[in-house]
Length: 518
View (cartoon, helix red, strand yellow):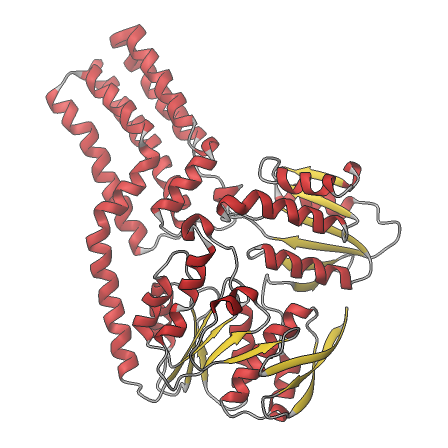
């Protein structure tokens, strides 16, 4: 009888461990496989793992009070733990990449050892205690598996990197353009891709494939002999990651779109962000083209001495945008080149931030030999980048979808865009994350800025948005115009239920936090 109960306990334990392994692997993937980010996230989100010590204590009490009878209750406790911690439907589900599969195998082997060693050496009670101890630390097993697998992952990645370098070596005439920045880099990449197609056969890294392995995947899967230009978006969350991508692709040209307080949990300081973004500039050859955003104070503060070209709206620059005319149907503006040539452009995109990013793309394309006249129709073709201040007509509402990511500069651009559109303005947001020590301050400032633009504010997640709420109330915003929702679905239901007194409903979706933050 005892042997059967022991087997049932072991099966319940494995079920509970499997659920935890999948859950925390999903969070680790959302945290970009970064140990520091995962640990910081766990520290700030104890509700995601506090059930583990609860079930541990429940099982331990059961063992101490009932001794051998505990094996009647332990299978039930582990099954309850498995049910309670079963992964829920996610906005961005776990992707079972080869890396994830290898880590899950490592976790499984560690877990089996946790059962087999005490089972062979000790009696049943000690084995049960070992199971409970292993269960309580299971959220950390993904980190252990990642550490154990590091040599394997390094070897696998190096194989793919070498293959990508081999492909690039076979294309000596290919020009590679690196695009980086705290924000704006994806938009500039998309705009540049459209503009450069007026003359060149262009490949760009898709969506947000801006990590070293994302770039390698693009090269190995999409680069063809017919491509003349490769636009390579370069993202980073810590010092050295831009250099890592540059060492792979060896860019000839580069654009730095902005520098700001983003990912400070891993960068720690703004100076580290500056240093990392300029790793792209340092990687360029002496005859390479470097384009810098002249309106960005943090870029200007670097005082970069090597040859470069600037673009701006407000500050004096080589490529100057001026005479902006912006309304809710589109934007027109003029651009002056270093030699004094001027041209008027029109786009269906709205907002000053879009003009600045488009001006950067115009400047770069013009430097690569495309005339301003040839760029005019290309600018008219530009579309909103998905989930980056993308205007969506939903019939009974106009939605400004800025859900991809959020940062202090981005929230300002989003609110500026919202202010341009007539109607009943509703903000839906869970706030900003990964801003380190500045997170509360930035979210409070976001609330103060929103108070002067929005007719109604819907915050998603009470704890996450406390500072935004405080910023709103500090600015004198009425409490009855603020609603705190638990989920994004509840927030959207509320947004569509608000009485707008006949005005057009305009909903700004500012950020959509991944599952690990909700």
